[in-house]
Amino acid sequence: MATLKDVARESGLTVGTVSRVLNNRGYISDSAREKVDQAMKKLNYRPNEVARSLSKSTSSTIGVIVPHIRHPYFTEMISNLEYQAYKKGYKVLLFNSRNTVEKEREYIEMCTGNKVAGIILCSGTVPVEVFGQIGIPVVTIERFLDNGMAAVECDNRQGGILAAEKLISCGCRHLLHVGNIGGVFMPADMRTEGFREVCEREHVPFEELLTEEIQYDSMMYGDMLEEVLRKYPETDGMFVNSDVIAAQTLQVCRKLHIDVPERLKIIGFDDVFLSTLTTPQLTTIHQPIREMAEIALNLLHDSVSGKLVAKRTVLPVSLVERETT
Image (cartoon, rainbow, N blue to C red; front, side, top):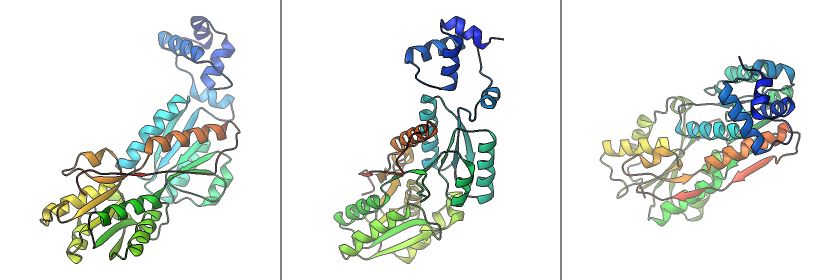
């Protein structure tokens, strides 16, 4: 079995340099990283992660906690986070909390027990005081906590504004917005505020509908959407809080013989791959998921390195017009 010394000999570098590459410490040239990587592959060398973490106060692993691993938004976010983590020399421990406080607490304990370098949190049910006790850098995505942690968000309010302005410019005069889970405040609630602001400013009638946690968990919105479209048959424009809801709105419209976009125009949110797979394709608000993941990893890496980081980063969104408007 190959050893650290074997890797050093094969790469032509010192044992100390190889160790710094493996532990991502100090300045390391791209050339040195490449030599070590090639030597490890040739020798089939695998570092002992447990031993490495025991020799340091932290490991080169980060914890990523999401509330819903099957949701297309989180699937895309996880993929981008893993890619950015790999580029910086981190491995990822992934946890699916399903918005359960007990599971999130357990996963945070697992992160501290495994001496993770930091945590990226995309879930929103753990009390703020928990994070003040663990002594590990935490970066939140789409969850702003006023306790000094770094947060990365998209401009949700601007997304609601863009959606309302687009529907109104298309001639819609009876609008409906399907928003976030009732009773759980998240940055996504700002989409509703932006949408409401434009409707009130333009004196366009609108209805707002909150969703329920059971619908979010199951990603099944069909019955609720059918009920609301039967209740408000004059609706000619809808803005919904995700592309998942928008896609199911299309299914309900087909069932109810509502032509899209002739009779009803629909705008989703996120701009995940799903938005291009529906017929017609979804007009949606583009959330810069790749950029959010990259910034979150940069913030975490800087925080682990002891640098001061921005408390809150808000990225712009944009309207992507396809066939539902």
